Length: 342
Image (cartoon, rainbow, N blue to C red; front, side):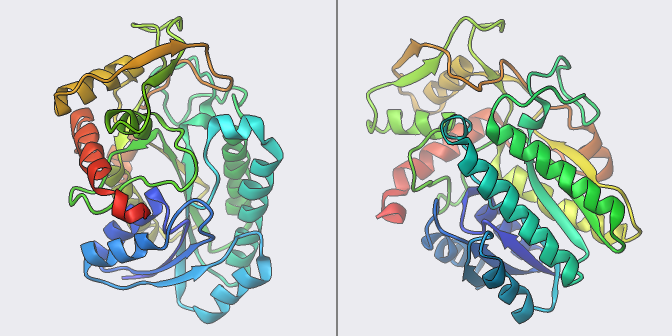
């Protein structure tokens, strides 16, 4: 058991990862500025895990308030860093907001981590670091193409900062987990994706259309060079993703010797088109989702999916849940989440 500081703790991936960490008897300290999440997530974590966690409402850009977290918790041994803005299209509209939030906040967090001698860091990265990769599936050694959005650039820069720090700092080990597209909900139906801002990701949008909250799903382009003309993504169940963090932490514990930054793809290895995701929803719900083809959206990558061989070999990780599991769990959560957001 070690003490883990989780930033973005009440957000979608952070809250599910905390559940997995607690199941392995780690002690968790949660930190979130609550700009795109709700404190109710902590209650749901408690209901599912049967355990309480210590929490702080702090913005990473408030360095002295962040410092106080380290002062009050000298037993922190690892940081799992989720806290970031994450919308591709919003980042195109507001690039400086993303650079300030995602990069400046991370710099302050890392400065304090080094100052207070916290040895392990797990970074919430993204497949967007690859840009429009010519490799398919992408591996960790696939060359980076230019970022397709300011959000993607913040993840590229974040990894570069972390790599520089790992190379220059003693007693510091870091792993970057390059997520593909997290989706789905906890099997209990008590916790899932519940952004307090406008929903922008595909699976939650599908859920809102299915629930009658939107008249139809807008599909941004059907003229891409893919098998059905729509974008292809790799969807990974949020609990599979959560487990990857716990295994990454175990890997750092078992390899305390100084190592450079280690990167791992975390995806299903299966490319899924937008139309195929719609078909999965129709299959698991018995409904027929209405959709409309509209113009392409700036910043969208044509197709990307993972080769997760490295994570399988070194972390012992592989996905358990299927695409239909993702859609069915997300649908169960959609029907249950109104109280969570009220």
